[in-house]
Image (cartoon, rainbow, N blue to C red; front, side, top):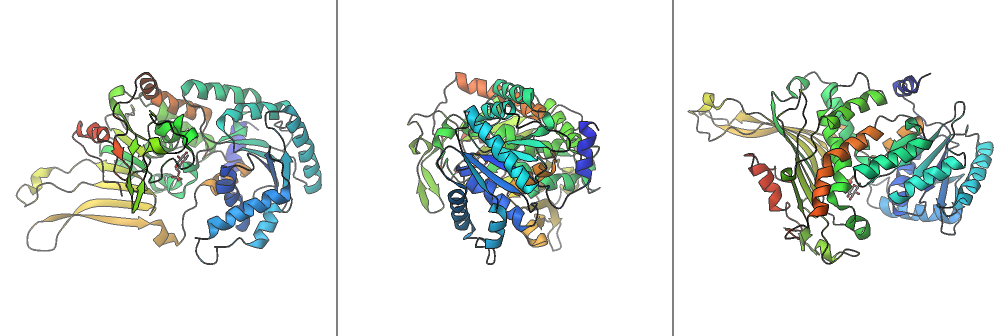
Length: 513
Ligand code: BG6
């Protein structure tokens, strides 16, 4: 069976329960493991999606054992559940016992070959005891400098070898490279020892219900697709605004910045969902081919189409917050951007001439992620005698978070004898309709990896395609120091260069929130 037909077969037969497997987490004591990975596993276990013989294996250098490790994870989980709705605000003991029944902890230095030899012995033993069929998922919840070395060591120890029906898969977290060259080098290194089908490059935005729903919205409805193009759409705005600052991640953020942290990954995935052509099927490679086409059709961003900013002190809600340069582990004269805006162009039949404006930043006025499509205006002539200055704009807004949903803004006649128009909206809200909050993405993605469905993971060519588009901005900024940082106050809507980017084209950003 070819890899592709194997994949299609997996995707076309949805599974309710993942197959038996060991999941090895590198960085077992790290923040990502306790904040996102383990809570997602707990939810999967509670929903009955993990096999009874699922085995959790932690690897980290700190001296610990399975009991202490899982106890620490449980305590952390309990604190995160405190604010959940009644009934779900405590750790369910039975679920937790099931999830951690066979948990094992391997103490070891992830840069040393011995650790992998020992891990191999532990996995063989667990496999025998729990009939795991040899299936193993390695989750790299570690700093990106360890991705290459860990994968090399796993391969050298023979732990990534797939035989017969059993599988060996690796989830690689972001950031995947820090520019085009490093992303290419990392792909090359990984693909020397792993097959592409074994690599699951994580972008948690792809696991968000609202992001996945874009495909359903576009391709399961006959209503929208015929106007989803340059004939009807004037421009698209993608906003990923956050109120949080850099939290405790100053050292990471100093060398990363808003562009690398959010744009070639999360924001580009949103663009791909909106801009892609309909796939032939929902099999992983059919979907990923269409997304890769979007990135191939994008021009590398032009210097005049990018804007960066950095927050100074300000106010978020009732709280005074410090500027970026005052955050822990941040240089007092830091040149790192905490805000970025860009105008991107997609040169294909569907989108030529339709600008995609994107912006993302920390410490903005509201936590708000949306994709807004602005439709071309109706001919004004018909209403020239009516007392309206301008017809309200037609927008279709895909609200990713919070208040997940879809909204359509259009004009309607106000009640009365005169033809007076008002801008009104039709709203679909996830919470109202499905009475359930959408998941944060990790559950879906971990489950998909366990069942071998790579649709929602990034392929090597996509990652490189996105870096290629943003590389000119990185080059420009590394050669030219920013002027006037900080240039927006915490709690505002961002720097003025961002507004100028749209004003130049006779357009304006939508209000955040
Ligand atoms: C992460 C970034 O990938 O995504 C963070 O590193 C950012 O800086 C986060 O805050 C945003 O994700 P979400 O799901 O909270 O919108």
